[in-house]
Length: 238
Image 1 (cartoon, rainbow, N blue to C red):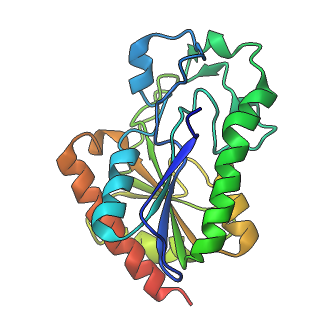
Image 2: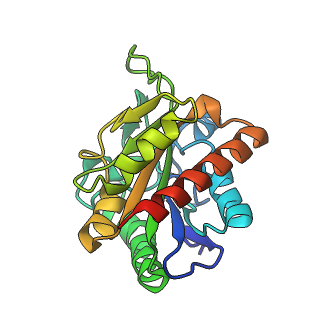
């Protein structure tokens, strides 16, 4: 049985690590979501671009990664166990009929709990100075006409130590930076709430706009920017 995550690179104490909860659009063969194939390549199934960027961060910038290996449509790893959207029956206006009546406890046991248990152990061994939480967002939701003009968002809940350092650094790159936008980390922040905020670990929650992370050149550019900013944030943390 395929693990719901993979880990690349070797963490070093006091370093930086990357966590990518929505990096994959993989659906196990025995699970039928009942949706058109093309939807597995849209934002409802994964955070486009994050897997490639996480791989580059590990390979070229010595920032190891804990990366999801299952689609958020199968089990959303960045949701509380009790959250209605953990096994979504619809996403951005698209019904997910295969999830209606799904065995939620089985999905938790197979995907969610092993993912977070492994992440907990990995972080305890890594003792990182900073966690880079990597996500991406669609420029426009199908269920909303509201534009999302930010190039990058910085998300946080109650611990904004890293965010306050990173926002001006990203703006200095000429980027339109969302401060807890396009949505608030106070609402959607489960993985970092559990593994960073609850443990006193500093983290930098990043959302990249998906039309800016389409090509290998885009991935290389963002990996370079994020590695540089993360390193400067880590150095500035007290």
